[in-house]
Length: 243
Image 1 (cartoon, one colour):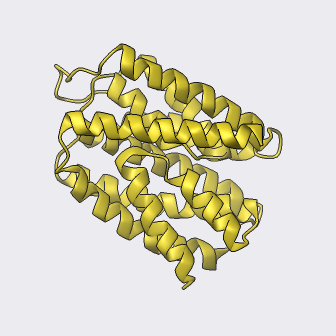
Image 2 (cartoon, rainbow, N blue to C red):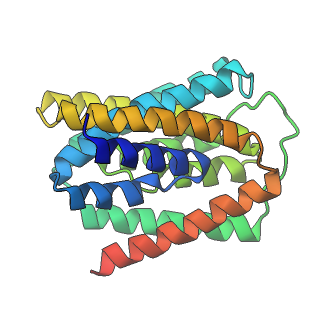
Image 3 (cartoon, rainbow, N blue to C red):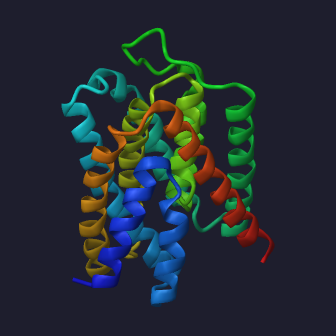
């Protein structure tokens, strides 16, 4: 067990599940620890696969969402994760940071301009019009990742999903895109399993804590948590982009 990575896993998963953005803290922390960038990304894909499915399963078991509604995400999220991993050698990290920055600013503006409303259809079916957007976010997740969960949360909240449903769909999509990307990274021998397992163990604990905390957060509080984390992520990305 690599204990610093275990602790990083707890904190980033806790933050990432509640509002997204855990990777923007976790990745720099792991770089300071001395791990190569590709090793960090691969370890994150494995730990996110484990932690995201565990938190999704808790919400599914509690009937926050229906499995048949979540299954619609599978082809878009898996294909996006695989595509992103394949593109990793073709697109620079700075370019993807710029793309994420534009998307997050746009999503944040939408949050203030048009306040999310509660869904009238409590079945929670995902509208087909956002499938291309979900695919694009999954491509970004497979390629790089930090800020992906915040983008997803903004998309689902803007469609009128409740905070808990937005978390559930986001965690399932994260599981799928990370799993697809992980297959590609493993195929290229980029997974350091000691680092990945240590990070995953902490992430699993953080994910379980976060879904229990989320149930105690009111909807208006949840929206502001997502907004504030998004603003923080935008600031981080701006710093990364211009340095």
